[in-house]
Each structure stands twice: as C-alpha cells, then as structure tokens.
Image 1 (spheres, helix red, strand yellow):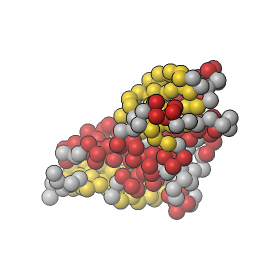
Image 2 (cartoon, rainbow over the protein chains, first blue to last red; image 1 turned 45 degrees about the vertical axis):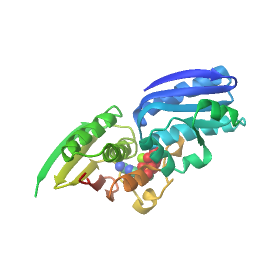
Image 3 (cartoon, chains in turn red, brown; image 1 turned 90 degrees about the vertical axis):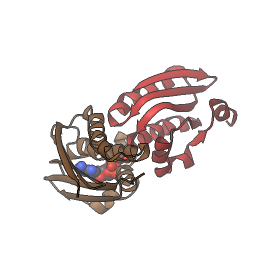
Length: 111
Length: 141
Ligand SMILES: Nc1ncnc2c1ncn2[C@@H]1O[C@H](COP(=O)(O)OP(=O)(O)OP(=O)(O)O)[C@@H](O)[C@H]1O
Ligand SMILES: [Mg+2]
C-alpha cells in the first residue's frame, strides 16, 4: 500500500493507494500517525480514490486515527469511496461518525 | 450437476492474505461472477483468513487451509485453522465484538462474512481450531 500526504492548512490529506487489509494496515497506521505528529495537523481527510480493496481492517485504521485526532478536537472526513469499499464502511456504521464528502474542498469547507 | 473443487494451504503470514483472496477469486471466476460478487467473496475470504492468522494463531506460526467447492452455481468456501479456537461463538459473531480492541480491530469480520455471503457456519473447539463454512450462489446474467 502506497501513502501520499498533502497538507491543506491544518488538514492532513492522506491518499491511500492499493489494498487495505490486515497486512498493509500495520504500516499504514504507523506512517499516518507519524505524519500527524510531524505536521501537527488537526484534521484528517482520507482520499480512497486509489483503494481497490478493503476489509474490516480498514475500519480499524480509520476509527483509530479518528480517536487520535478527536482527542484534540480534530475532524475526519473520507472522499472518493468506490462502491465495494463504501459497503464495508456502511456495515460498520462508520459513515454515521465519520462523514463522506464528495470532494476535498467540500470536506474542508464544512469544517 | 457440474462440480469442481480445489484446496490450498499456506503458513499463517499476513502476506498470504492477498494471495488467499486472489486464489479464491480466480477459482470463482469460472462462474462468470459480476465484479460485485467477486468483491464480496474476496472480502469474506480476507476476513476469515485474517481471523485465522491474528486470532487462531495469534500471529504465531500455523497452517491455514482453504477448500473451495463449486456445485452448479454455488461456491462453498471453507477456511480452517488449528489454532486456539473460539470460546463463545454467539458472542464472537455479534457485530462490534472483538477480543483484541488493543490491535484496533473493529469486531466487524463475521458481520462482513455474513452480509457478503449467502450463508455462514462457524464451528470451533478450544485448543483444536476453527472451521468457517460460507456459501454464495452466483446469479446467471
Ligand atoms: N479463527 C479464529 N480463531 C479464534 N478466535 C477467532 C477466530 N475468528 C474469530 N475469532 C474471535 O471472534 C472475534 C470476532 O471476530 P471478527 O472477525 O468479527 O472481529 P475481529 O477480528 O475482532 O475484528 P475485525 O475483523 O473487525 O478486524 C475475534 O475478536 C476473536 O475473538
Ligand atoms: Mg476479524
């Protein structure tokens, strides 16, 4: 799994590419946490446009990062979910806590 | 009735999670599945194999076995481990139940298997291992 980071003000944009499963989630969560600490970002946007597979391990990664930033009043958004991945998130009821936005601008503007 | 079957065995390494779901998807492809059906099967297999690795063998070494069977348009997938077993299967199958919250597990694996497949049977014995049996019928398009 490849991770690309971008910053928009105090929002860290994490673009994930590849398959998000138990194996790839281990290093993904470490890299994301390090980047949050390094940049001091408050909010997080996950860009899922490059993710073609995800199982429940991905729910764990997103909720775990949500817990981390929410402690400091941060917000988390998700953009560009493919239908198969959206179904996994919906099962977990995750989209009730963490919102899906149509674009990065929409996510950041709503905060 | 058309019938076919296959069996794969591999060590309980997380690198084999993607191997496992691709192998099952490749076997299922003879049923001309839709992309959605294929994605459902891959996700369910990924959940069962991941559980065998992190819960059954607790990230230690062991063998995971997958047996697949096709009968007409129904695929049966069996995932077996000889790991520690499940104490309370009813509790384990509850959405959001996890015995390992410290590993950031969400407790949604069994719910995913149940939702994305047509049927799910879980059999387990403490100290002996766990057997997951799932079926899915592929629609004719
Ligand atoms: N093969 C197995 N061997 C032993 N215990 C298992 C096995 N599979 C599942 N379990 C038990 O059942 C519980 C629920 O499994 P489930 O897959 O639903 O959630 P999880 O693995 O904890 O979290 P998630 O799958 O969302 O990452 C696990 O926490 C574990 O205690
Ligand atoms: Mg699981």
